[in-house]
Amino acid sequence: MGSRKKRAFERVYALFDRDNHASYHQALELAKKLNKTLINDEGEKVQFRSIVSIPSFELWFLLHFKLVHGSLSHKDALRQLKEHMPNYEKGNRGCFEQTRSHLSIALANSKKLIESADPYDGNMPYTDIGSLVEYLSKIKD
Image 1 (cartoon, rainbow, N blue to C red):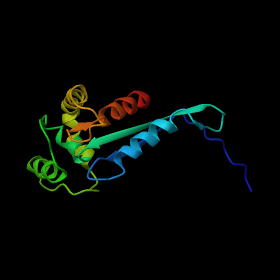
Image 2 (image 1 turned 30 degrees about the horizontal axis):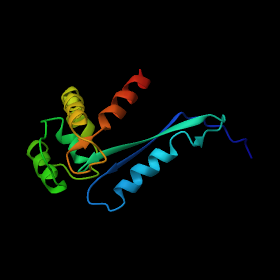
Image 3 (image 1 turned 180 degrees about the vertical axis):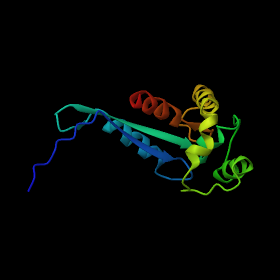
């Protein structure tokens, strides 16, 4: 048997939707507790960060086309998204390619939501997927 290669990592991200999950706030608290408690193969503490979308992941795609104001249900987010991406279905491949040209709009819109909403509230549209996308873009270069 070959030797197992060590895998060192600095960060772990957990992406999840608010939807109507009763355990949403518990998940936020668990993520907060896990931060800096995980240890990688090099013995270093690992940053653990939750990336949430309220009401759902579809909000991130919708923000590529428009800024959303006020309360929004998952059903409403999906309906509005389909106005811009008629063939969208959860789990479809190719969504990044369809929205790539609008990425700067989505990043700006998500920053506006972060300034005006709180993920702990859990009711107003919010997503910090943009911060993850920006981080991944930087390490890719």
